[in-house]
Image (cartoon, rainbow, N blue to C red):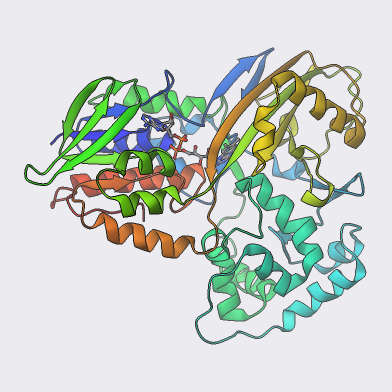
Amino acid sequence: MRVIVIGGGISGLSAAYYLAKHGVASTLIEREARLGGIIATERAAGCVLEAGPDSYLAQKPWALHLIRELGLGDDVIGSNDHLRVTYVQKRGRLVPLPDGLMLMIPTRISPLLRTSLLGFETKLRMGMEWFRRPRNGWQPDRSVAEFVAAHYGWEAVDYLAEPLLSGVYGGDPGNLSVTSVLPRFVELERKYGSLTKGVLRERRKAAGHAKGMPLFQTLKGGLGQLVDALVAQTRPSPVVLHAAAQAVEWVPEAGVWCVRAGGEWLEADRLVLACQAYQAAALLGATDGELAALLGSIPYSNSITISLVYDKAGFGHPLNGFGFLVPKSERQLLVACTWVGTKFSHRVPEDKAVLRCFVGGEDPGVLALSDRELVTEVRAELAAIMAVSETPVFTHVARWPRSMAQYTVGHADRLARIESRLERLPGLHLAGNAYRGIGIPDCIRMGKQAADAIAAPEGGLKTTAAR
Ligand SMILES: Cc1cc2nc3c(=O)[nH]c(=O)nc-3n(C[C@H](O)[C@H](O)[C@H](O)COP(=O)(O)OP(=O)(O)OC[C@H]3O[C@@H](n4cnc5c(N)ncnc54)[C@H](O)[C@@H]3O)c2cc1C
């Protein structure tokens, strides 16, 4: 069977790896000279610098399974959760998130009462939320902002949901779909009415299950280790073609897919599109205009990471936490900043301090700024927020335009329509952060599902679109 995988990020690499485990060789087409997509680890001044993702959620098992299979189990490290404090900027000052929050759901009373992040009315409302009753019947999809406001009020949206989700999705909770972004919370609401009650009840049931598990995991040498191991251990190794796929055609009479890349046409019996949805849309335009339109309608946000490496001696601010988030109402450019050496060991030598800043989101204007302008602006904001006036010994800027798919309201319906179009195109599979999970573990799961479907007895003719 001839299989082509388009896209050499973690989704495509996982598809190629699991295909190879099933004994199916593939051709991997990647337009960049480097494999790994958004995962990119750099080393400088003794520091491990993540230009893209720095870790994955430990709760989702697919990354750890793969990492162990690749023999990297001993290199897995957890986040230093005993030091975990996340600050939120409020009126220019850094205020710690109250203890006991499950994302934006409060589960402990006294830290909530003490915090200066939220006003009295919001606190009262959060307490009263306990008395919400389950509502019967079907509920339409809503935005995350509407959902959170209905439970805890708008201040909880502005100072909890918005900054927390901007850090993860680079998106606006007023647009993001609660059904797709927070499906577990929707389920808790359906079952218990109150999210706080739901979290506490479910936690009691699961007590002891995940005890001691850190929130995040990563690899000592950075997530680039995962990419290197995947490439090295995919046997039979894929033929890697470093060229942009320019067109895709389905030839029904022959039952083959033709892919034009690097000036030649390649044929395949099965095709995995593990590139961004808008790239898949451009490729599929001639084959199925409706499918292409659906894929092309999935919006993406931009992201830029700016790592600033300082000499620790004389560094003004205590790095007593994982970092801070800036809510939209107070935001200039900076969305979030991670205090790298506190969050993870093995990243920053004793004599250095590293601040990893995020800018971006849905404002395309930031991409027009030069690296120098970005660093200057971010340093000015750090001076105002953290009183850091030292000159960094080293800075690193990484740009990720249109990299984070946005699961906007109606995303689940759109996916259902995409899947129904795919049924007409035998042997075509989709994987990637545009579909059912933007984090690394979900991308690995979707790559594996495509590979498993292709290797299944019916030979992957029945399309499974990133379930
Ligand atoms: C700044 C940032 C921080 C993040 N942090 C985290 C984190 O800490 N934890 C976490 O779990 N997730 C995080 N994420 C999300 C996660 O990194 C991504 O969702 C995931 O890596 C996406 O993998 P992918 O393979 O689906 O897509 P990508 O990595 O985007 O790979 C797609 C690949 O397809 C290639 N391609 C596109 N079109 C073509 C074409 N026509 N021909 C050939 N090749 C093509 C691209 O060059 C690219 O290499 C972060 C994302 C960003 C941007």
